[in-house]
Image (tube, rainbow, N blue to C red):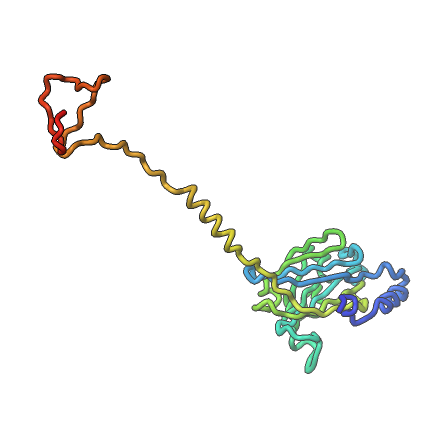
Length: 247
């Protein structure tokens, strides 16, 4: 199923909303692609949204609502749809609020239900679980959050992403599931070759020992002949070798 087919409301609906606000259809912020990739080793998730245009998170109206904003509804069970009986929010663990970027320049993550008086800029949601920085490269938004912040432990969660214009839902919704980042398998053959090469390189060199002077069975070093084959000392006593031949 193509990404565009997952939208609950068609592009026509979004265009109708834009025309109702006196803006042309091209000005409506849309999601071209998105993902939530979990790194289990780091226990964090990278959210990425590729918008159709550069979003404006800092222009606000008289009610302090952003020109463009987004919101994630996180379900740690990993089930879809997100809003289901018995209560639309009972299965949720957290809300990721792009609506509060203009307040402190970061992405805030809140509890679903508030306890006591509502916090300023909370939109009626619960207390802040944590906040994380974001990057915006052209129309691509990215931010990473610890799994603990969103109320998940195994990285297998589902979510609903909605877009808003000055606090009003613009009709764009996408529901999806997180993706576990794959870890490349180690190349055992390459590792073996590397180990072998290192073993050869670090093999200790053997010291070359000079050969001992040869001795006969009597423990005496043999005489060295002169150029004419005559022993150096003609008056020396002949020595008998094992074969009985005098020298």
